[in-house]
Image (cartoon, rainbow, N blue to C red; front, side, top):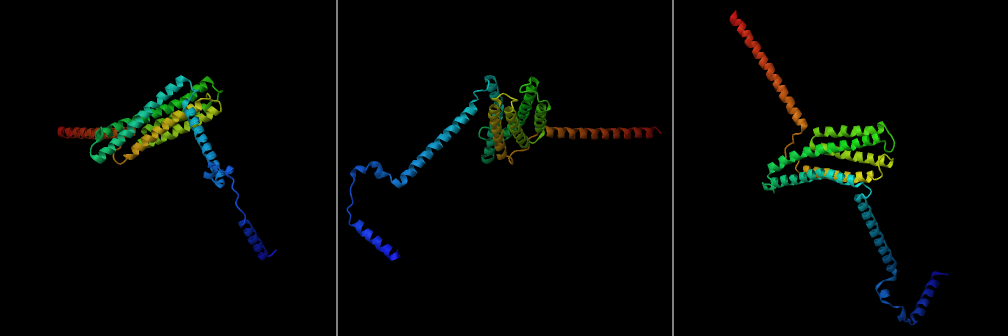
Length: 284
């Protein structure tokens, strides 16, 4: 069939349908059919299904988070004492952030909000070693738990593999008290996370009670967030406060004093010898 014949057939069909009278079907018309186009009706239903699925997913995630932080399987004694153990971290962290804000406020306005800039800086230098020292204690405690469970034979005896964790933890933690506060907090943050992953793997292997992994996750989350808050506060005033004097600075100052005392003793001994020589010449 040629193209001319096809076009002629189309025109005849159009003329035929154009002479037909449209039929009316009131019974098939409804409010819904007038408002919703059949073309988009399927899309609308699919979108509603997606919204429902998304809300269900969010609710499921919220239930998981709530169940994780609820720690229903954790013994009450460990639950309460563990939460009490993170309070000093929260207190020093929030105090650090507030003092940093007050120092910045004093730097901008010329006077502090509640404290003077000098007082806030002095308190900041007092709190910083407290947080670092407490962190070193907690890290050492987490390592000691491995020794205690090895002594008790919980999950079997694993000998040096278990003892090594108890040794590594304080070996990393205690040198941080000699670091500048920023490096000390970053090192402790990484150590806390390393110990969490170590404990989570040990829990999966049966070295710890089944609830210990989620218990450690919650406590590590609180401690890690506290360290991050302290670092943020400290970073805001890095160029506005002087360097805090830590144990390393005190050791350096002590070494300088000892060197100066030795120098003074040598000078005194030299003078005494010279004075003795002069007396011998006078007698001659």
